[in-house]
Picture: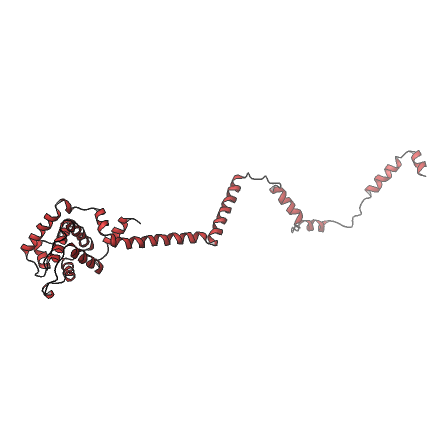
Length: 268
C-alpha cells in the first residue's frame, strides 16, 4: 500500500498518547541530562508536552513535524554532550516553535509560547532558544518534504499500511469467493447461453410459411362446425316430398338402346 496514503491517514488522526510518548522518548535521546536531585523542581517532560498541546491546540501535522527538527538536531549535537534539568524541555519547545511557524501561516507568537511554558521560561529565553535552534539546524534545513515525513513517521505508518493491505486482501478474497459460488457460475453460464441463442436467432434468415393465413382460416372452417342457422332455414323452406326424377336410370336405358344387335345376342 502507498506510503503517501498511510501518511495522509496518519496526519488526519487526532493527537494520541502514543505520539506524546514517542516525542518525549525522541527528545530524551538527543542529549543526556543528569537526574536532578530534586525531581519536583522540574516538570516532567511528558507533562510539559501535554501542557503545550493543550494551551496551543496544536494538531497532529504540526506536532509530529517536530520529529524532523529533533532528528536533524540530534545529527549535529555531539554525542558526549550533557545538558541541564530543563534542556529536554527547551529542545522540544524550540522544535515545536519552528514546526508551528514553518507549517502554518498563522502561529502563536513567542510571547504566547512563553505563557504556555507555565513559568519555566521567560520571553527573552524563548527568543534566544528560537535563534539557537536555527543556528544548530540551519535555515536551509528548515525545509522538508513527504519523503522526510515518511522516514520519521515510519513506526506509525507501518501499522497503517498493514491494515490497508489486510483490507485490500479481504476485499479481493470476498470478490473471488462471490465469483466462485455455484449460483454465480450458473448465472454466468445461463447468461452466456442466452446471449448465444439471441445471436443465432438474429443471424438466421426467417423461414417461409408453409400455410398461408387464408388457408389456415379455410382449414379452421372445415374443422369447426358452423353455428350459423342460415342452412337450417333453407332446409325448412324446401318441400321434402317432391319425388326425385330417375335421371340416372333413364340415361342407362338410352345407352342400352344404342348397343348393336350382335352385342344383344351375345348377351342372351
